[in-house]
Image (cartoon, rainbow, N blue to C red; front, side):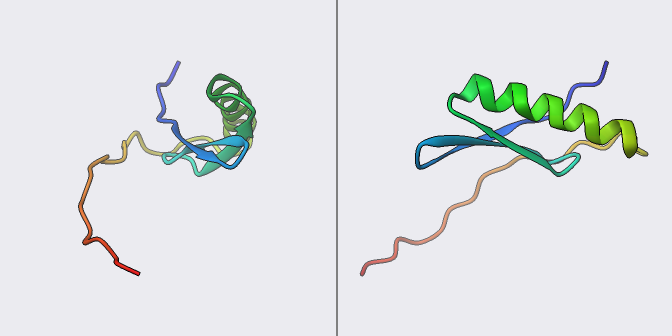
Length: 69
């Protein structure tokens, strides 16, 4: 069993889930559904393209200036 990362963002009426370690993306009507779909997509991807290294992405934040229109 391997633990991977899911980044979930709201996109209009759907949630989009991305796995940065693998590059897989999926969506769902709820956060939970998007993660379930991402897990399935990632498992199918890894059957064909197994992970070669065990590196994890670094997740951090940064600030940008406000844009006044």
